[in-house]
Length: 330
Image (cartoon, rainbow, N blue to C red; front, top):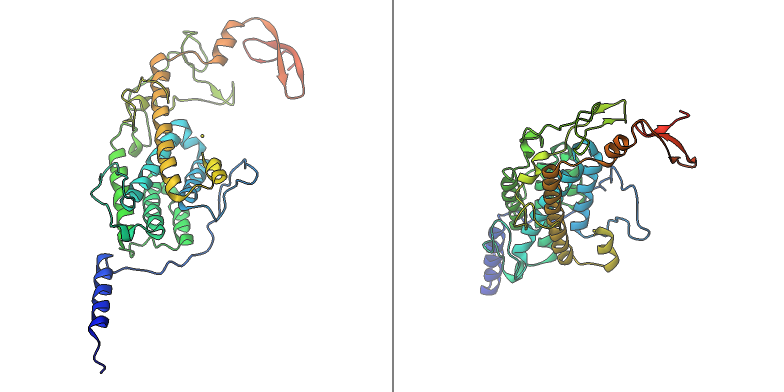
């Protein structure tokens, strides 16, 4: 048996310590099969479409948008805006320990990693594990799709990766989602109304022409609408001092400017939380004022009259029944 030199032994000991510090799970990152983008974007800006060359923030943003497109009836403006805020807060909090100055929203500076660990590889992994955990919490029915994205990036979702970046990403995502479970949105209750709001008007009768009226969708014949998330004024905002303060767009711009990962994790953290706070402010005023919607006001104003209005695409203008909002000839 060969006697090893002191230098060799020192190298072996340092490698063992490094392995232990990463939970004994330093793994080779091997990209898996492509994750299909489904449902795909409806409209693309020429030359700025999503691509596999995007950084991980943009790639997870696409996963979030796919989940929203797959369930339009279960999201809407408020839930979508909150999801953007939650997911990008988790990504920011996972990236922050690998930056010299950033402070996470849940753990502050306590997870700061040494300069030698602030690599792009570690940032990518921490952000991806955080995004995966946050998105599974927000859209559990899409877990298999999110797992495909992780597999494409070369990351495991079976808990076998106990490296420091994976641990940080999972841990901060749990802290963010645990906090948001109690933020007043009623996520765990399917975002059902917790205020008992009842509109003054019904889909078939206008009692107060200055108040909001639920409609039937399709118009006049379908099921009555229900008010979307009247409880949103109670949601804990990120930066608003008051839900009734002043109301406060990005991914294509990032590609146009050639943003780095560090640029995008900060950009979309700020944008996502701004959108969430804007939804809180807008919905707070929406249900505080409970004002008439334009279609109700127009129909009530011109009830019993025939007016000249637009008849539809390529049909020009002509007589329309004011109350029904449909051409007289139909």
